[in-house]
Image (cartoon, rainbow, N blue to C red; front, side, top):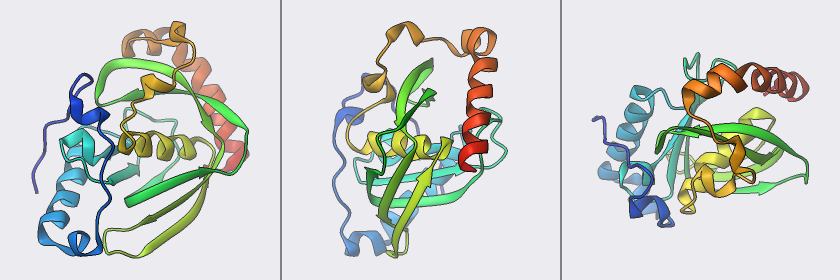
Length: 191
């Protein structure tokens, strides 16, 4: 396993739609090493998730995990989840305003509307089918990571640019109100 460099906004790999992974490639030792590197890099950076495109690998793969994350103490737990060739489909028109940041967009946060309930269909790292409903704040995390595989970053979804903030100013001026809204969402959906 290795900690990889994370691409930052402006690098073309972040705007490149990821290619689908074949069953043969998924089972390969090279791909499995990539999955391990993705996990290690995500954990080293204290990310809630990381897409392969963010480590310069334009393949349809992302990892998610929230477990006492110091960057996101208000986020509900997400066990380590590997998604290969994921498709996210909204199950409602209802959205919530998610104050997001991104390891590929350092020191910047902004409000992004995210669906409150989505269906996630993908393969796990062994090629087993995943088909689950994700809701609440966790649904936003899944949508954020899958966006990377479509060549999108959260800035593309910010509707009101006046919500953009540095991390320090988010913590100073916006975090308390956002955490209250996030807690209400977690209480409502349980995730």
